[in-house]
Length: 70
Image (cartoon, rainbow, N blue to C red):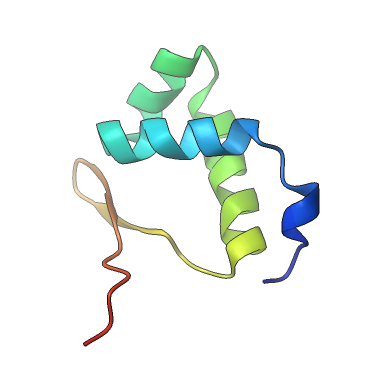
């Protein structure tokens, strides 16, 4: 983890939840009342904090990475 989780803005967890549910950054922004750019910046902060990509881009949105390793 690059950044300390102690300093994590807990609003980013709400953002993550909505992105997971919608699988779409723009739609998540609409639901949260923020811009797509703000959602993308929040996701970048989460990636930096957790040192993980979290999602992969798809043609019509994003898909959470499968975190289970075989």
